Length: 207
Length: 222
Image 1 (cartoon, rainbow over the protein chains, first blue to last red):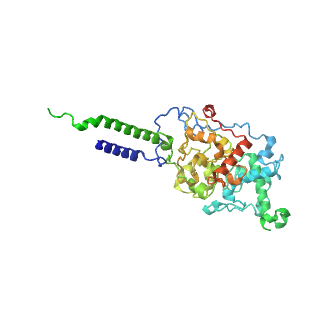
Image 2 (image 1 turned 180 degrees about the horizontal axis):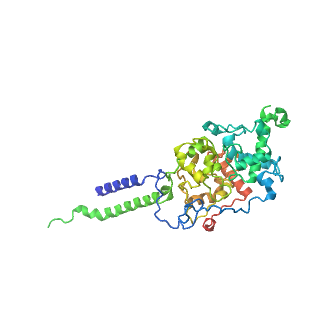
Image 3 (image 1 turned 135 degrees about the vertical axis):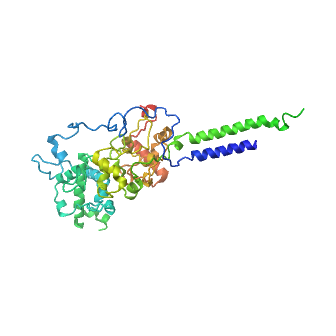
């Protein structure tokens, strides 16, 4: 009987060494003993499909269609940053309040700060890795930009070169205006003096 | 007449019975340990077309998860980034790296990058990312410390039991989104007040935001 137990022990050791432990890294697709209805025949986002020639389940928009949510000409200000006479808007066409600035700060931190830096000085983390051309918001030319021009750069990418690509897919027009407002706040903050700080808040800054 | 059965054969039926019990025990233990996603799915780390390191991008550079997975707050599906998202930096950083050839080709031609999906819910499960993220469930609760993974591997079992554990006690996970430190994409955040502090905060958030995660079948199997 001892031999039977010994053989069983060996088989268990063999099985465990073949199957491994929980959490072990593996590259092959996960084992599915009972596939149930885990994989059903319908199209999933960003998935493959053998039906279409380009192999994608997601279908591109047919040419010349416009989504119902996209701007009408009357709303050029909000969606294109332009006034009716085709000049850039000088002011932000939505109400600028603390809520908008907070949203702008949040979005700026996600999408802009990696390159432009938390201060808007162009010294984001990517500068150490080779993004050498990121400019500061604080030079003369960029201080002079109108709100509409900043909005346009976020929407369509940089106008002078292709160093910054469009962010329209990541930021909705409302969010873009929030970011413009926050960029304005950064520009203002970096050119401020202690006299600009309300007396009540000076202690927080150690002034 | 010679002895056909030795005397020890008298004990044999009992020994066989005992052995069957032991064998049954081993089988049960094996099924318990192996016949679950905790073994079958956790640790799945397929080879990706581009050896993208979340440890470098999300951990070392501190890029927010939403920089690439940009629709996660708006959409049920946490999207993979477009090739342009990669090119935002990689048109200048490591612009000629052969490892990024697939991405450059995708950017130029529009062909898809054949990423391999790791975290999968069965098709009869409804799961919505935005609902969870905008109520203060962090990425880390289901995906683990992605910011420490050179190669992404599945970290949690994502079984129905895993879902229900949290749906029955969401206060153990809910973050207060008004506090920037608790942003859902900060994977290293834990409540400074420990489990007690987390539970107290969670209960308050449940009441304030009327959070009622479904625990009925039709909540997810709809």
